[in-house]
Structures are given as C-alpha cells and as structure tokens.
Image 1: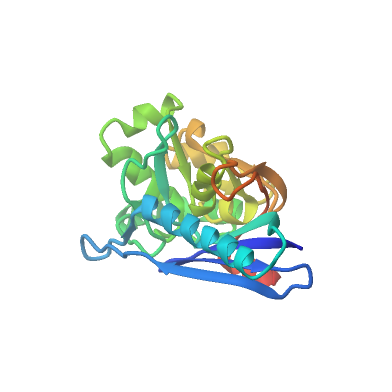
Image 2 (image 1 turned 90 degrees about the vertical axis):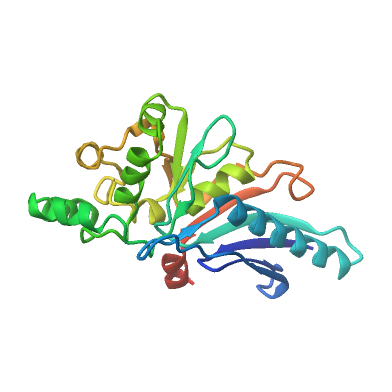
Length: 252
C-alpha cells in the first residue's frame, strides 16, 4: 500500500498526515514549537526548530504506518504546505540560519514600507505583484536581514547565502541542500515576483535592494522538484507538490 505524505508547516505547529490511495487518513502527527516576541511588533521563529519539528512528525507518521500494517509502508510522494511570507536567510555551505526567521506577522519594517509609499512606489508594486505594499510580505523582511546581520549583504551578493520562505527552507533540508526552490504561490507573496511573467522581477529586486543570487528557483506548485535525502525517511521520496497554506486550502 503506497501513501502520500502531506507536510503542513504552520505558524504555531508542524503537522504531517499520511493518506492512503483512497484519500483516507492513515497516520497523523503534530508538534508545536516556540513563538518569540523580542520587541513589540516583532515575531520570530527558530528556523532549526521548524525543521526539526517537521522532520519529527514526518518520521512519526512513517512509524505509525509501519505499526499498522504487515506490509512495508511506501511513501509515493510528499506534498508541502506552509505558513506564507515568513522569511529565512541561511548559509549555503553549512545550512545554518544567520538569524531567527522573521514571521509573517512581524511589523518591524512598517517604516520602510511607509518610506516607499511616500516615494510613490506602491502603484508599481501592486501592478507587478498584485499585492499592496505592506510589511506583511517578505521583501522588506529580507532587506532588513541583509542590512542588519553583519556581512550578510556582501555574502548574499557573492552567492554564499540563500533566502527562502518556509517552503524553500523545508525543501532545502529535505534534499540535503540539493534543491533551492519555491513554488509560484509562495514566491507570489514576497513582493519580488512579477505575477505576469511568474519570474523574479529585476525592477523590484533593485527597489528592495535584493541580490538575485540569494533567491530560490521558482517552480510550479504541482510537479516533482527533487527527492528527499535517503537517510531522512528510510528511502528517497519525490517532493511533488508545494503550495502556500491559503492557496492549498483554496485548491482543496
């Protein structure tokens, strides 16, 4: 019996659900993780804790499948859905985050958004991205990290760092750093992707001072984009679907 393993990485917990070929829930596991509020208006997560909690619940589902059947459980594919806009910046060589993840709720870059609005940039941003100019989205969060973490901007321009929303962070770890990608539904929530071309937009990258070298490859929401490292879940498994949580819920 083969299964589909859904990884649901949310704002307060990581969940995994295994479905059988008839769409029935065959296993489920969930683990909460810490929320950090270092200053008023700031919301942070430990990106390593996000990854470790997501891996733990995925492994728990595999254990549940093994315990409930005389057959060796087989995961045909993995699908990922995730909290959107939350921003992670990490070292490509070590895989270690340079700073806490800045969560979608975080408001530390509100003043930067107001500055851009006064400069008359809001209409341009909305025309290209379909979004209003707001600190909710990833662009000003990433810009802040590049400016505030010592040496980060130079290292990003040199190609030493990787940015991603949570989908990218999970894909990177699941594939042991072989795949740096984000699906269109998550990339569309960054203020950096042109929704008319489905590509990173050079004018927006200049506006937010984001080096292209730090960005993930944009891939379709449905389709195989890589395999998990063989030591994570017992065998390599295709990652075959990615969508931000509200888009995934709408599709469902």
